[in-house]
Image (cartoon, rainbow, N blue to C red):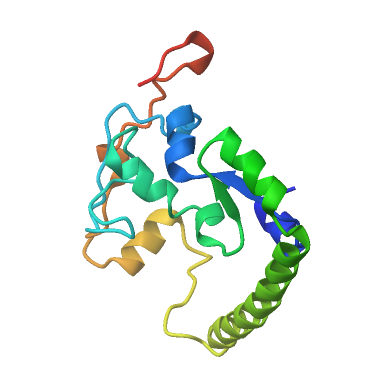
Length: 169
């Protein structure tokens, strides 16, 4: 069951805080870059931190943008002792009710947004989907003059970590 499914069902969720999960080393296998590529599109939601960095302060900024840290009513804990204390003190019924209430509100918001998107697409929105084109043709249509970024030539996607062998990049 995914986080979203559990959340929509109103199952109270507890997750390690960003600091705690990083201290546990549970995200070592998050990135397999040999070298860290940087976006050609400028700053991102985490500022100048690269989402592709294998370590450093940028990792905490990006992990903090994960669903479990941005969805309300998910309880974070800073240690195992803190988890036990929070489980003992939690009003699980109230947490579940808040999660279900938030989900109902979000459902209405998402329904309205998707309805508008679909209506725009059906009515011949400003950006047609070039489904009959090849990838290269579609990129040329979207980026006239060949100005689209050629990531394949700049990014080395070779996996250099081998956790099963105790090797991390």
